[in-house]
Length: 208
Image (tube, rainbow, N blue to C red; front, side):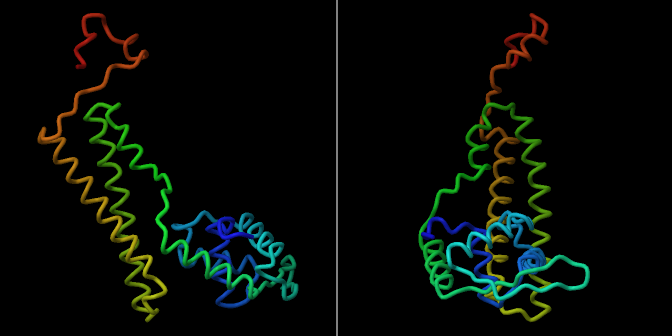
């Protein structure tokens, strides 16, 4: 498996198995307990599939299968030497090389001029509410891990996410001030065909 084929879930799986051997369901529980679903898309089924791909590629290996009570048999895996090397290589690449991940929000902002100013304002205010909730969650998360005495190197991503959220929140608030004050002129877009068909003839053209 080349470094470009190691998916985010593959990286997370190898990182967990670098800590200790686990079975996939245990890996899923740890990921959810750490709220890493905020960083990667993870479901039990996709995690099992990811571990299977890692095994086929020789990056992890099965230690054995066990059954607890009436639960299905579960196979425990550990990372191999090749897995350690692949994880190290991929992490170095991810840390050093910026990648355009085509985020949705910048694209939406670039095309926001297609909506009326009041609609843009309302939608951005709605986004601010959600961002404030996300930031509050991360702040409480930081307090929780700090109280547990967990070394900061294990949760520096929380500080990064906080910084990114605060930056976006500040930027949106500044944009809303520009819109409300008229500092940023915002000509309303041309009406859509459906809007034209629903408007009285004498009102056509007033939108601009």
